Length: 469
Image 1 (tube, rainbow, N blue to C red):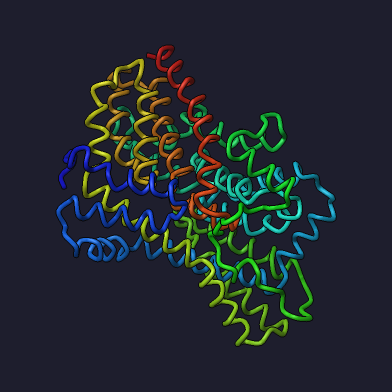
Image 2 (cartoon, rainbow, N blue to C red):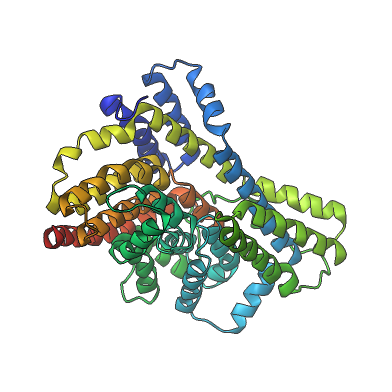
């Protein structure tokens, strides 16, 4: 399909079906599969369209990368369980005698610390804090929310991440932005205008400190956990296999938190950040592979039999299989939405409204709708940035003004909104995986918070539009 082409309102059907069914049935896999099947039928692909869609969507480097990343993360978490590393880390934190609020703040800070990867952050926070949060009677939904809100929203605010490089790359050639250096400078100037991302991160701290009280489904989840001791709702299906939640430590294995937990985490951080600095691309998947291999060697040296290590690794792979299946179907939905021109249709019915005063607000809303419908933030950036930013420059006389910076930030924030809370988003899936939360329970409890932040951001963009235009 050519740029700008679309199938009209039909192009919204797959994503709409997936989202409605997901909330109705609470089964993301079933909902995504039905949406894919209906989508290929209405687009005229016939009965063979479904398997062809899977082949095209999953036979890509990007899906292979995230699948391998998931597998290596699963192995590493299984190794953490088998060596007692997480239990050891939990005991260290327990000795600090932190309150329920304190534990949530630790999780919040940990998520922001691992800013370099929106994939690693929610998994790291969930896996390391889950045992501690369970003991403190913090709901899994709450833990997933903390992990999710400190992943993409943080990554898009830091200039030394792949997110910043990607957004800056899209800006080159627009207005007076001539090269990568100019583009990164503009990205940095736009950070204070990225209201959604800034407020999403802040909102976690404010609700953790009870400055803003819990509300909506999250309040009910927290009351259930605190009063009934149920960190999961009745009938919930955690998006993490029992292999990664019930794996006992190896018998008589002496726990060494530094060797079996801190060192592998440092390896992940060093490799990811180091490759970003030297190669301009964070090799996150390779970082987890390296950490898994090193920890496997340490386990063997410390006396765990080779066969047990391999069995643990296979259990880790099996444990992340539910998340991989959802990611596979989400990638298929994204591919289907792209081929049907979903984003093009949304833009076609809104672009006539893009006047100077409303430009930041409408840009944010358009990006948010596209990202939520497709589950992809980077794809949203690539679609909306070339449309809205040149328009902002035309209104500003080709000068880098507050209107231009707010419009750039609105694209970034709107894209993060979808990535942050769409049931189709990979980071939303990973947050559910890390916290071992039911995926749709995580989405359902998080959306009111995300919408609240989005509403405040919308008001700020409206004000900026009238002040700066």
